[in-house]
Image 1 (spheres, rainbow, N blue to C red):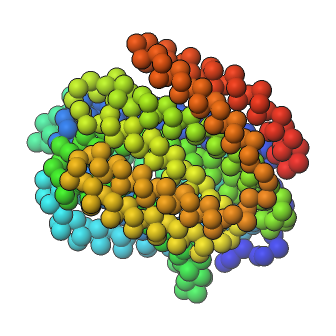
Image 2 (image 1 turned 45 degrees about the vertical axis):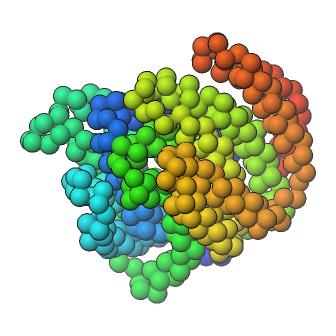
Image 3 (image 1 turned 135 degrees about the vertical axis):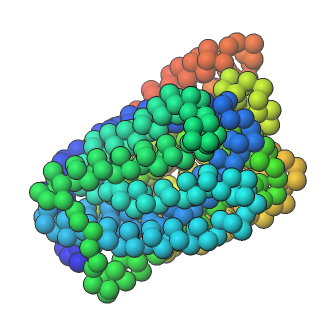
Length: 491
């Protein structure tokens, strides 16, 4: 069953709750900050416990499984958010979700089999097959997850709680059990990490299913839909899934290729930095979970309003992300030393490069998601494909120079993506963004100056002083712009 073309926003209001988009972002943002902190703490504990070689094996397993999860989801979750946001009644949502869940389970089963057959082709897998297969098995609870239902109904408070619960369970298991469970049942500590991950996903999927039943009156039961309807959804989601899979190359092909071209220890050094900086990409995902339903409905009702809102949100992203690029580029060595001591000597350089690289990636993702929200997902694919090709070529060519070389390859690819998606989505830029960009640039220069001229100060003191100075510049200069645009767009 597909959503009727004319349902629009009133249906979403009948089922979901009315919240401003800033509150939606705030709800998800608070949970995501907690989630990221928990994940970073768990990540550092794992790295310190297992060492660089086993940490490299674990992160390679995570990277491989991420491709399996994307193929198993194939853009269907994003499609469901967009289509559920346009449905009218709980019964309609439940019928749609049941057919959708059946399709995702069928696709997940196929991916699980294909992944198990492909893994033995990689030398990294043979280091410890249990680890790679354990991460691959996450396809099962991932397919059962109904986060997309909560996002489509704008029940973002529940989605936030479930995401936080998932990370809390995983981090708690890692911190409390990892060292004590070493050797249990003949398994070394690294083997238990994917088990903790799998259990955390399964529990969170069960909680979301229970909440969805409360919202819709009855449980969402997976069912085989009419073949024509399954085909329609796969075709509609195809460009999103292909784009997500190609985008994944821009996220972690560096780890995959280093696993082929270098040693597990080299992968561990690289991943120690990359996984920390990766929170910038997660931040974009958080923002878009709140923006996608609103922008999707606005595009149906008033394309001009949708464009103005997109520009407002882009300005806020620039204000938030430019200082992170400056701070990471200047403080990468200090941050890695604070987290890992001297156990990962190459991580500092990687962190400095990727801090700039992932900000460029975040802006490129923002434009790509804007194209998806405006039903132009096909146009988002070519820029992502160009960036992905550049990533593969760059990492293969520069990996012999070590982790820093691989990071430079990713930086070039992310810059290509940012430029290409901005060009393709340039029609969304109906509002002059010069003011917020200049304000962000001025504040970032001041931040960078503080960080650079006070090298003897403790790290946290420099960060605090630079942040206060940045806010002191950005708030008075940027707030009038924000207020004006908020009034014009009905934020």
